[in-house]
Amino acid sequence: MQEVSQQVYPLSTLYVVATPIGNTGDITLRALNVLSIADAIACEDTRNTAHLLGRYGLSKELIAAHEHNEREAAEKLVSRLQAGQRIALVSDAGTPAVSDPGARIVDAVRAAGLRVMPLPGASAAVTALSAGGLLHERFYFVGFLPAKAKQREQSLQELLGVTATLVFYEAPHRIAETAAALAKVLGPDRQVVFARELTKLFEEIHRCPLQDASAWVTANANREKGEYVLLVEGAAGASSADDAETDRILSVLLAELPVKQAAALAAQISGKKKNALYERALQLKQDA
Ligand code: SAM
Image 1: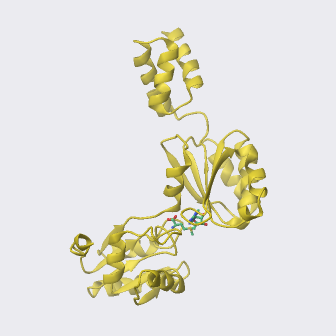
Image 2: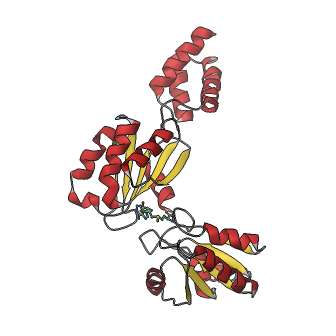
């Protein structure tokens, strides 16, 4: 698209470029333009990125910048940026620096007083949230849980009181253990969304109560393959700020409407459960 190539792409700038999480069609026009005009591309795995670029008919100098050499790579990139180059930074999939290398490089480039320009695009967490259908407005990004059972349960214990939707990344070989641990620590009733192989051929998005999570994973051997985002409904008790806002909405509605109608409207406004709001409305009316 001509409009994109005519935009300004300053020199001496690090371009943080999101790439697809599976479907190569999910790349932005701006990303393609930057990848084609960059002097070099810093990437997690040069083979993966060379392959991805090939899908778009591009070929470029690649600089390895993974978790084991991020500091040294950052120094090298800063001096190339100081020399006036444009460098793109990508990870193997999705948005760099989100459960991926990149943050150290961005930090070093900023510390050197150079410009960092983000090019937004796919991220597995946001993609899962967009199709998960959990109604809570807030989410809490956890990323990967610890691999060892004891530490994993400890991390989950710390999340018990979080009322926002919890967002986890998980590797396929640990999905069964993690599903069991989630039910064990967070209880049987919360809804979980398994978002598997998003944007790919065998994409699967399944929602069920945590008590049925393990059975869903083991029902089909393919479910222990592929990439996963897990969303788990937040704790039932809302935060105090949230409670206060719900009470305010209910009070306004109760001044004009019967309890049942006020609760139904408040449920639509807040996305919370009608029954719980009905109980709360009765209580507020009684207190008044
Ligand atoms: N930077 C990436 C992002 O913006 O989402 C995340 C990279 S992290 C190393 C990789 C993890 O993201 C996978 O283990 C999986 O949990 C999740 N993930 C990546 N692609 C996915 C996909 N297509 N479907 C489901 N989960 C995916």
